[in-house]
Length: 210
Image (cartoon, rainbow, N blue to C red; front, side):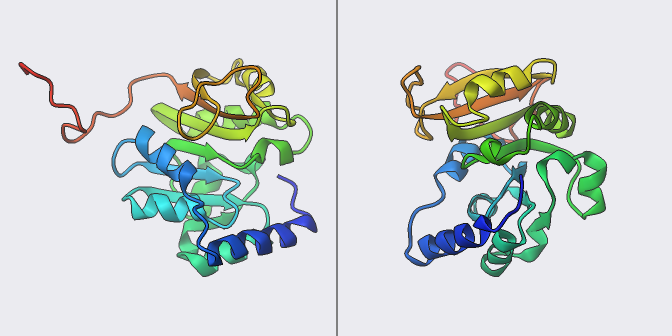
């Protein structure tokens, strides 16, 4: 992402929504549903940290990175400052994350709120590769973005080629609405190879006869 003068206004706007009690946790609920319990989750372009805070409240080890000090200032006021670091998407790697005191591997990476539209140039393919390198087996990259904006689903699919991540689901909203060519919004789920770690309990499944 490219930090710029517009981020101060964005941070103020989002802080106002928080103060007004607006529900900003819908993406966190989606991620929580798709993640194992106590998952390690990285919010790439975390903004004011709403998703990180909501995922922490649900028992996950969630962290956020963002290149804008304006939005991170708000995140650190609202939540534990240790959960957040100033880091751009292109700089995300296991070694860089560990340097800043964050885990180097994750069960899920989230990019919500049109983050791909704010990435510089053709950075998206490299970010797919970087994310793939920090995902655990069976891990997921979840992207929520406007369909027609730069970095939308068509460009995401091109970026995914050769990254080791495969598109497994695509929805028109965070509530599993079916996606079509007419959809204005997209939620895309890409998965890494391998098998995700098994749930520690029944995880809601009680198989008859088992």
